[in-house]
Length: 375
Image (spheres, rainbow, N blue to C red):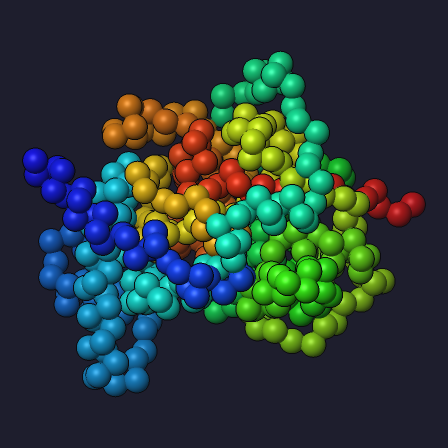
């Protein structure tokens, strides 16, 4: 009975996340931040908050703001406990987001507006990839990770800019270029933030257009790169974390995009694994509801709405055995690269259960191919 009551309480605390209205989702992927994890088991909220403030160098406007952020922090401790009850195989607690309200977190870190119809965006924006055969899926390794093969750059930090869509895009292009050339290049997110404003979305879906630090979609970014001629390196067009005047130089293009495809959700996670192994790291979107309090471990939330994918990340690998007590022992998982710096999560990475479209991670998956370098 105690366990049932705990789960019921956790569900009540999570309902505002699961039932967000259309007004809470403004049509873009948005996120911000860097930082690390600070946990203080057994400490009162005041002591934990003081440690949080010191660790992250927080500066508030005065005593009233400090007191307000302390109240927010205490409420987020309760949310972390609720998430822990719903997601017992991961570790939830104090993170760099613990002084943000749920509304602030959503405004800065979430927001692809699919209207509950993610597949409309996928179908309307790109062709489907050729499916892998059953024999190909059966031959896939039990575990796979592109980090071990040199196809993934270090974890990056997007700062106070809703540019996760740009980081997801460059990660996919970096991996595809590595597969094509053997060279791992660090490509420019800032070019996408500053320059990708060409309207390729429909007049009835203008809120799905790319808009710099106000959000965007990876699929739009692929189209922009094909139109403009390619992507520059970060060293030539460094990241600032703020929108600026477009400084794209066609003479300094490092990688050209040839085409891109969707990996259909109907194909199941076997098709996604096959595309990952065959095509390189994949751009994906997911519901980030549990990421505000995520500290580590394999996340297998019991409740995580699949329709509201709102965060762009990079799928780089998968594993076969992540322990999940409430999910019948060991469960397979995805390895996901985030763009909030190495101090968040597992050194900037997130492990999420695979096999049943947890948090909508199977719903908006795309692969990209690069053009051969000029002779």
